[in-house]
Image (cartoon, rainbow, N blue to C red):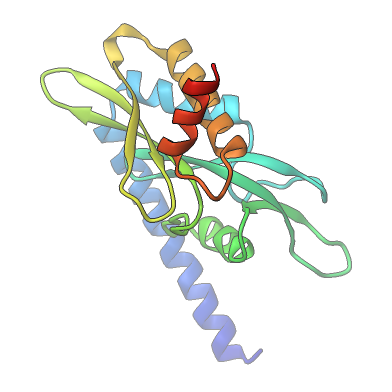
Length: 188
């Protein structure tokens, strides 16, 4: 790699760090303490964030923040080569290693259309509501949970996320979420 390319990468890293710092300040200033508490509690329960160091065989759920939101999806370990490889958590798809690099540089990461995932965000009207959405393939987001933030819905939110994660894992790829849920209703 030439010196010019290294300098371009260094400059991109500095720009990303500056944008990360300003984005973090903007996010914190726009979300109330209750909203931040809910985001942090979900991140804590998931336990793994995009780009975190992990074991070589790790697979599971990971979370990552976007402005005003948190995404939850399946992940797995990817290696960052070299003599002493480092394993990091990335999205469980072909672009997993690229998403790690983007997240570590502070860029906005979006799950690909074919990857089922959950989106947690807030709606501000007269009351602030926490919303949990399900994304399936390229279909529009479907709301699966809604509650007033003032009601402290931590337990209910965690249960809704756990149930939705079960849907993602158990849903046959040949069925949509609606079709899968209908089979659960008829068999139950």
